[in-house]
Length: 254
Length: 267
Image (cartoon, rainbow over all chains, first blue to last red; front, side, top):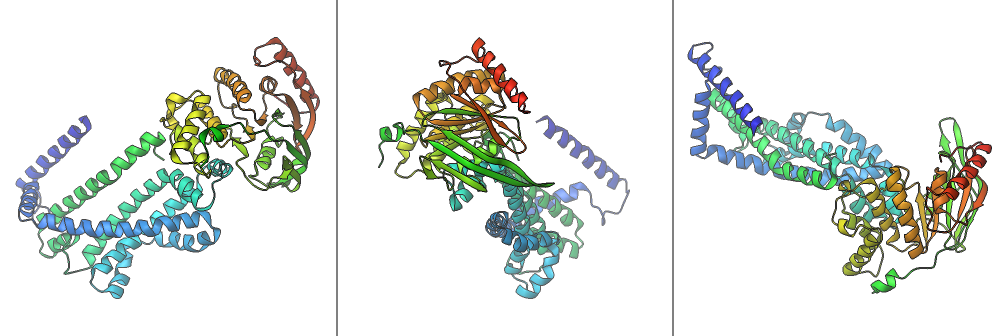
C-alpha cells in the first residue's frame, strides 16, 4: 500500500511538473502534449468505445497466438529435453530463431498471408513458441536427477514419467518460461499491428499507428499508456495467481 | 481388486546376493573403477550396514542393487532371480529425501501406490495413511514438502519407500544431512519399524556409530577401487542406544580396523 502511494505521488509530481512546463511554453505541444490533453483523449476514447474495442481485438489476437505458442512450444520443449536427436535438430533451430526479433517475421508474414489475421497470428506465434520451447527444455534438463531415479524405483516410466514427474517438477521453470513467452507475444503483436494494416479488426497497435499518421500526439501517448496498462494487467491477472500457488506448494519460485 | 489388509500383509523379506560385481565410470583422467569384484550376501530380513568413506563405491553398489544402473561384470540376485532393472520389490531411500515438492506428504506416499495395479483410490489412500501413521506423520498428510523439517522429510521418504511393500529396502545415507538429535530419534523409530515390518535392509553410511546402532552386520568398504573388506556381526540386544557404552566400544574397534585398512569413518 505504501509503495503504491509512493508511486502515485511520483506520478503526480511528474504530471504537475510536465503540465506547468508546457503551460510556460518550454516546448511545442505538437511534439509533446500536456498530460491533461492525453487524459482528455483517453476519456473521450473510453466514452465512444473505440479504446475498449481496440483492446478487445488486441487481446483476442494475443490469447490466440499465445495459446498456439504454448501448444507448440511446450511439447517440443519436452521432446528436446528428452531426446538428443530432437535437441540437435529442433533445439538448435529454436535457439537461432529465438534471437530473431519478432518484427523480422512481418515481411514474410505479409508475403505469405497478405494483410490478414493469419499474418498477425503467425508473427505472434513465431515470437512466442521458441522462447517457451527453450524455457521448457532448460527447466526439464536442470532437474535434479534424483527425481527421475526415485520415480523409476517406484515403477514410473515413459509417458507416466513425462507427465507425472518431469512436467510438474519443471513447472516453476516452465511458468517463468511462459511469462517470458507472454512478454514476447505481447511485443510481437504490437509490432504486427503497427506494420500489418488490416480491415478485420482495429487493435491498439493500429490506433497507435493512425495516431502517428494523423499526427495526433495525444492519441499516440494515450494509446502507449493504454498498452502499458493492458500488459501489466494481463500479466498480473494471468501469472499472479499461478505464481502465488507455486509459492505455496513449492515454497519458492524457481 | 486387492484387499487393503492383503496389501498391508507383511511380505517375506528377500535374500540378496551380489557376486563378483564390478563397475567403472568414465572420469576426467581415464576410467575410475568404482567397484572391484564385490561380493555380498544378505540373508532374509537381515539389516546390513555398508560402511566406508565417501567415494568407496557404496552408493554405486546400492544403485546397482536398485537396478538404476547396470553392472559391468558379475551378477545381482534377489531370491535367486537376477536384477535387470528397478522393481517394486526393492525400494530406495535417498540421502536428500528426493520427495516431490509438487505433491503433499500424502501425495508422495501415494506415488508408488498409483503405479501398483489392482488398488483403487480408496484402498491406496488407506494404505498410504497406514504408512504415514507408521512413521508418525498422520497429522501432516496434507502438508507441503517445504513445510516439513529435514527429519520429517526423511520420515515421508521412508513411508514412500515402504508403501509399495518391498521385500528389500535400500537406504543411501538417509540420515547424513540431519542434526544429531533428530537422527537419534530416527534410529529408535527405524529399529521399531523394522521390527514391525520385517524387511531385508541394506543401509549405506560413513557413520560408524550409526552402523553399530542399526545393523545386524557391518561390512567395511575401502575406496580406489571400491572393495569389500571385513565384516562385523553385531549381536547386541535391541533397541540399541547410540550413547550406550557398548556401542561406543564397538564403534572404536571398527574405526580402528577401518583406519588400519586406510579408510576413514566418522564416529
